[in-house]
Length: 100
Image (cartoon, rainbow, N blue to C red):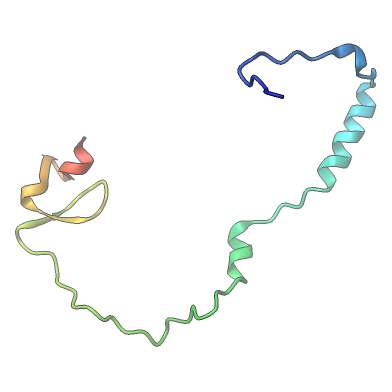
């Protein structure tokens, strides 16, 4: 059977029992008590991926400092050549990708 998801929903209120406010509050408290609030940062602290120990790793590529003809974009924080400079407003320098 096809369902039209754009059609407005019609709810029939006659089949719902008339519950008192106290009963509804008691049900909502019961439903809330089953929820466990776990902070994701705390959970990730104890989770360790296999082979994730990178303490013995060394940098395998040569790092070159920013050259005189390069700038750091204030939006994406990537180092670009001056030819990619879209605009400069005081200390704010934007690359052509971030300017649009």
